[in-house]
Length: 197
Image 1 (cartoon, rainbow, N blue to C red):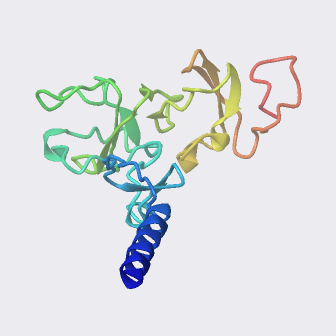
Image 2 (spheres, rainbow, N blue to C red):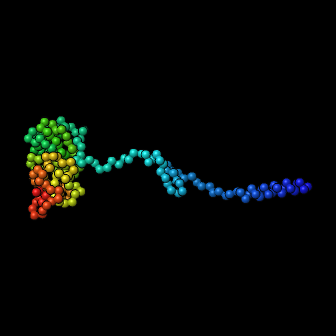
Image 3 (tube, rainbow, N blue to C red):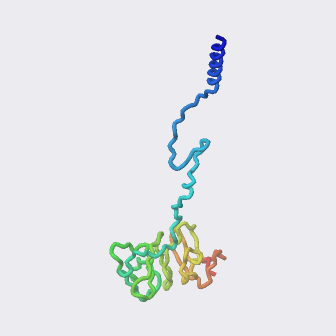
């Protein structure tokens, strides 16, 4: 009988000891995470997501590139204007391809019968003084004032002696200063254009 009591006692002690090691766990519902993991309640992106290429290409190029799909053969160049001109100038371009907007296009003729390039200016095409190449308007986003063409983006080398006035994001006037005669920091305010030296 002693042996029976000892076995029952050992069994009860073992059973009691076993119960003290039981831990109550709460069941947690799994979270749905597609490309991130959660570590200590903080979402962590999967390392492969960090290697993905960035799709933001930044601002568009200015001046814009030539349009490779433009039907250049459908535009006739005027031999008297061997330089870039705004397509809106009907004296230079009496006809234009059907369905193509002239406004904002800059057409480059280099003395041949057809143009070598057509650019679609994002802020419009602007005329320069007679005998100088026209250009894409670069006043958008600039404060009102006078600027040397040499300080604008992508100027034609033949226009470096010019100055322009910008007002409300558009070019409103142009001036011939002369080669090397336009100062980035305008030296005086007594006459227009103040940047011509």
